[in-house]
Amino acid sequence: MTAAAPPSDLTTFQPPLNGIYVERRACESWTEISPPPTSERAGSMGVLTSLIPPRYAEDMPPKLAEIERLALAWFKNFLQINNYQLDENGNVVPGPGKPDGPLIGSEAVSPDEAARPMREQWQLLNDLLTTLRYHFEAFYDLDPLDFTVFVGRLGGTTSQVAHQDGWSPTSVYDRIEAAFSEWVMHVDGLITEEQWTGKAAAKFRDDFLKPFYKAARQQQSYAQILAVIPQTYHEAATTAQRYLLTIADTCIARLSGESGAPGQAYDIEVLSWTSMITGALSLFPPLSPVAGPISLGTAIVGYARGKQVEAPDEAPIEGTVAPQVLRTAIELIIDVESGLAELDRMLAESLNHDLNSRTGFGSPGLRLERPELANGPATMGTPTIDKYDVPMNLNVVVSLVNLYKAGYINLPGAAGEYAAAEATLALCTPLQSSGTYFLRSAQRFDEARNQLAGILRNTAESLTACGATLVACAKEYELTDEEQAEYLLRVDDLVQPTADPPATPARGPV
Image (tube, rainbow, N blue to C red):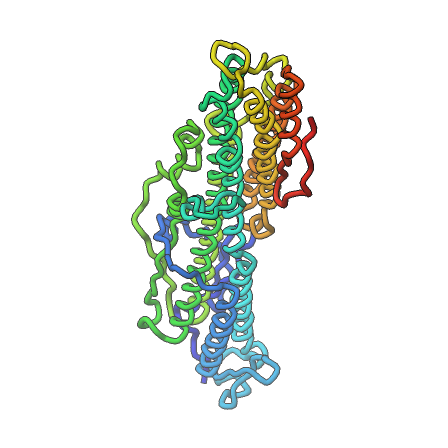
């Protein structure tokens, strides 16, 4: 009696060595084959969506345990068919009905030599299970919620950037908005309400307020476009992990004998990395047209809008014999890893383009350098409250106090928001999981983040310098003794703001 031949579709798979896939049929020599083209399975991939993504690190371990149990059950059955079994130590040994010696007319082989093909299959099955477990468990640290935190710090999605009653700024985007709407707008009101008119007011409006408004809008766009990156990471991590859980479920189904006869495929819809970028972009509101080309010409947005969405494709997990099921599952997981690498490459190239582009993060309109008028009150001229640069009217004390308040309260308050925005931006450092799957784009993201931090710092310094100039202008205006006494009384009660949290109140210096 001779051992039954292994099934014709029994194949074993080793992880890629130096980029080469290695396949072997039972009892045959190793052969090298080329990696399967990505286009055969990857194509354009329809995103698997769910309102509540499963917790991958919690759901995968029991699935892995079930895959290993079913694979072991299959192998024990395979050994039994071939008159072999596993002993209590996990070694392949002849079954109780297998003869000890060779049959008449057959080549004489020892029992140890006869069992060698079965031992090799046992070792290779264990290698497959180890490889499968390694690839599945590598995604445990990729937590989509980590990236959601980054998105919130930068500015949030559509629901988060809309201001509600009782709104309090916390993100970079909202801090910039608060700097303008809560602080600088009051300074602009001095001019629009004609409390402050003349050449000095016009110079301050044209040389500082208008450039600040445009710079702030571009800075908000910068923060929003940066937020697209971690949102894309979130979309990719969520979808990839859900897809991996689907692969695991399909493995269990195939090993359990579902989906037809051996060799029949159990198809899984594959992923679309481009659609993940499109999905991430759809969560953000349209960027302000005031921001100019940075909101429209950035490479990330342009890539996603210009990319055609291909038809969905499907990938098979074939066969019911454990080695073939495990082998095709591993190939699908490697495709996921390759897709993440491609997404990383595309994002890195887009960010690199934006970092060096004058229509991207290199836009000169982003920076609000210290203007000439911040060098001292002389550059501002003499403050006047009436038109045609005539001296201030009877409301001179009120006007000067408002001017002093603009320089001592409002502009430092705006600078404080920018300092808080920079501090929030410092918390958006790349995570370890980013380096695992998004190394190149995470490095470019960090460069862009540092560049924005410098822009915010320069803007805060300009706000502070201009504030000091307005204070100096108010202090140097000539008043009568009675006006000076009233002026000192009013400004002495002003408390300069600080960034969150507020500091102990202090009287304003005059």
